[in-house]
Length: 490
Image (cartoon, rainbow, N blue to C red; front, side, top):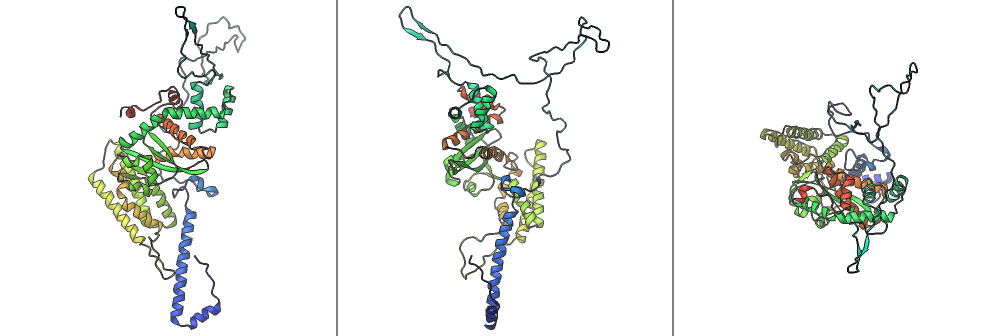
């Protein structure tokens, strides 16, 4: 936009003396400038008004002006804290403790009578749960060597599988080191310090990287089986993506996950061609749950949209452009969510035809009400020529278009009870990847980033199926990585 020059009083009077047409032209030109500037101010104010509570911006972008927490959930009658019937995690006394320490009473506390020979009437017990002092355990494997007296040939016993070097680390150390790095996200230097402090043996960073490479190689086929099962067998699959720095360059981490499976893939770019390269969406048999990114809709498959994203956008509209339809459709979405959850609790697999008719009719009415309040914006000509392309619409109009054009995807949770209201599952699965970046910065190599994706997906899948993370890593190192039965049989 060209700089705006302030007209002097003499220039304005000169235009006035040119007649009525000159004045009209000046006012029209000024009005167009005012409208353009007002629109630019609106866009900038909208940008400043957005935060993690009313848009898709991450909490880290809130900065010092972090908004006070306001949940999108409705208030309920339950008090905060543990609920009645919740099992909790309180320590419980065991019947057979590892160590028993007897504390004797040798004299009466009142009259000092000797009680050493008196029979004990009962015991009051208190149990202390603690860890034993950790010591590195060294196992020496000795393979016998014998010379056959018959043929004179030399014979040596076979070492166990995995015992390949004169001095090496064992399965437990490898499993714990990889667990700390890949799951707890500790940097290599801190893991080395941790092992030196607790076990008295510092691990080199080269050894730690080698452990990760070993496990990644051994669970690679599990990762491939999970990918195939997600693509061909699952009914509802959650997708999300986030930026990740690798060797100082921006890459994109893609996740595809279900309640029981997690698959991560790292790619240099993020878009339709890259999704084709990953190979899940082009052949997907189930419904893809996502946040509405346009690349997903290029696939002719069933879709489901994250309604928490819609609620955030509606919250933004309520704060910046309050209109009656915004509050009404927010309440309607939450009501439909509540009704479907109650129906699931009762063991139902669908709503009644009347409920569907009522909710869909009200949804359509509110969308039309929104359109009436937000007509299409026409292009403003500033130089006498029309610009090509679509005219940028208001945030309200854009949201209305999405809610109308993708109605079946927005309300998929209402018709198919297997479909959730949101995409929180994928967002949970990908959130720790951002934490990894905050702790360690970028991945140094593409190979290290790929290993992280493979191992992290393996651990996530193991935990979703009730496995202990370190146990699953032990199994992988031992050459028998965990694979869920329903995947193995499929």
